[in-house]
Length: 208
Image 1 (cartoon, helix red, strand yellow):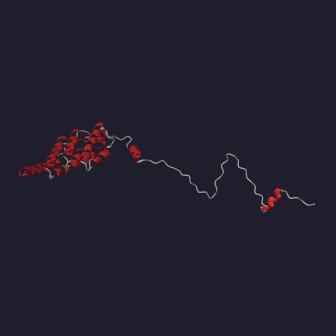
Image 2 (image 1 turned 180 degrees about the vertical axis):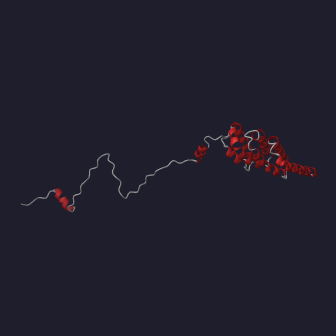
Image 3 (image 1 turned 120 degrees about the horizontal axis):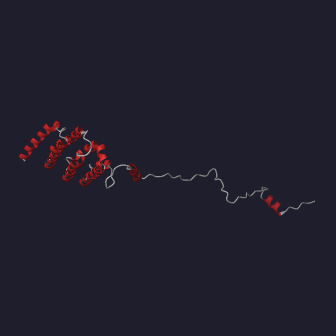
């Protein structure tokens, strides 16, 4: 008896007799990625901006009306621009008046930095500095560290007395008088040198 081939059997024979099965995919099921697939997923991290870092560092610190700390203002007193130096001195005055404890804690550091401006080239900076010492720094703080304060001040006062500019020399004498006024017991160690400087400068003024 001769067997009759069906259409499906004839198609399989033409394709080589291999029967490919179709896999049914379930709807909603996510297929796993191939093994040779490159992972392009980007994991982002929080970026801390400099402004945020600075703001966090200022938490709990006394600041001026412009939002600057005492440390920042002390640094600005060395600015190349005279107006910036003068504004920094005003900011320091603002902080010390509103936060007396700042002066008690950092008086020596403040004096050590500000004394550099005794011989400043700008007369407004010198005058602003003088008023700051007279009205805030010398009257405030503790009196336990008189010796170090006077020592820090007089080294720069004597340098300013030897300055070539007359106005700088005259302001130096005003600072010297200010030290005598607030720290009379500590000044005798420098009295002789101060007297000699005054004598020499008086002779220079007469000669001029």
